[in-house]
Image (cartoon, rainbow, N blue to C red; front, side, top):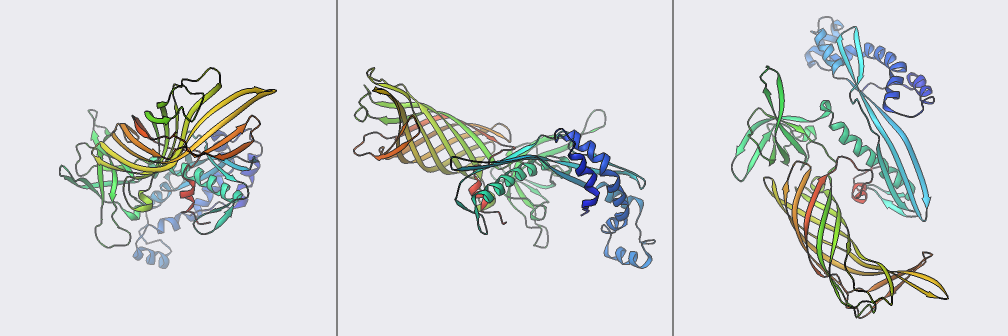
Length: 489
């Protein structure tokens, strides 16, 4: 690795002070003006060493003896080394921290400029940006003031943890964006196709050495010649890694087996091209669901409420890399629901709705583009409303009535493209009767009281439509607690 020393960056750092903003174009122009020439000079000094690294041990030995004059190094060897060289320049555009209402928030944003060394011959260099347009990514983390948080090897205070996890989120976004650059996208050749109807797999010559992991997604690409005689790339399918070949520690041929999700006319000689993502999906689920809100618990209701319409918002993290089981997910689900309530006009009741928060786990079973997802979760449900009344002065009180519950889900989905799934959903929720009430006055003061002998709960069947989209980037890691357990710091 060639490292630019601090002295070579002095002019660059001084130039940064004059920039109006840290835009991609401004930084590239500044780099060209202050860093590129000394960098090219440095590359001149190490070119023979870099070329030597591409030689055989026998060639290296000869190079030491005759100072590389008779080692077989050609201009082509050196140019290959040059043209395989890349530079990266991380740019932090901003960071902020804020401590308010017992919460600490840290955010950081930035981007990476990737540059490639292009060489026509030993005397003609150019260093050009690989990513022509760059939009800053963001990492945000929120912690509770005074709390300690666990990472893989130790505990951190709330500020350290927030900064570390925000930076981790930012770097994850950078990594996905980098993998989209063709030069950094992992690829492998299809060496065999199993065309059995049930167990349809592609055998590919990449594995642990190249960093392939379970459920990594790849496009299957075929190179064809068009009518003008030019070579064109055509996507013919989409696959995920199902059984990883250990070609790093084991001797011999150990391919990786990929399972088709979008099938095409697969043949030997095609190749796989990486289709990177965060491994986090976002889901939306409009639904109709059952509730049991009893008028016996609420004197302002003229009738029981038995059903509602709502929307679920879900974030799903693929756990395959952590637990070794493909298509297994941890889900955070936030839901809201509204209903028509027959309220006695003598009471000033408003903003009556339900919401819930659940943690669940699910597994998808695939047959080509179709999958059946089964899941179960645990969480809490809330019935919320406001009561306005006047006793000497105006009063406004918010009531949040809570019940804990289990939920069981099933959805049947169709893979529209590698990122989007659409399906139908059915579920059942089994909850306690409401057992706790948070009462909040208009000044935000909260009191909590136990409830006894309630008849109201959130049991019932739900049906709906299910949409899932795989995210390319996300400013906040909804699974930061899981991510933290893989960080050593």
